[in-house]
Amino acid sequence: MLLLKRMVRRQIMRAAFGAVAAVFLLGALVLVHVILFEALTPYVTPLEDSAILFAIDAVVAVLFGVLAMRDAPDAIETEARQLRDQSLGGMRESLAIAALLGPLGKVAARAVGRKRATGLTLAALAATFLAGNRR
Image (spheres, rainbow, N blue to C red):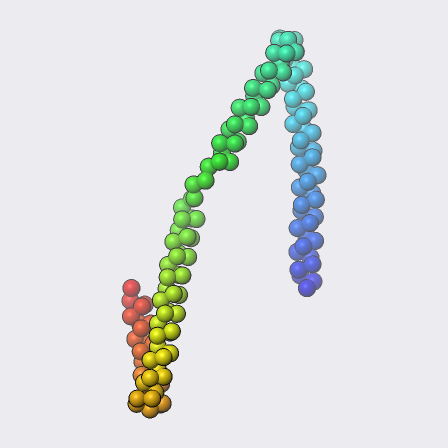
């Protein structure tokens, strides 16, 4: 419980520090705009100055918007998804075999006796798993 509390506390502190950093970053970006506005004032009118800054901001916003819309999985994500699908397929096969062997074991126990049926069921399970490992 102590570990969980400390982890939560650490994450809350990180979030608080990140929020403060974001506020100061926003202030710095506003100040950069003011500096650029003042630097361009001797060369262009205030209206042209504002238009130039607006164009720069729009280009940056579109660039980051296009980057945010990209949704192509990388090679590691694709490989992880394939590995997950293979693992789930193997698990389904194992569960299906176990589900079939249970009733078959009961039928065999009635037919040939309990000790021999248990041996047959274990032999069938071993053969199934050994055959599955060869793939």
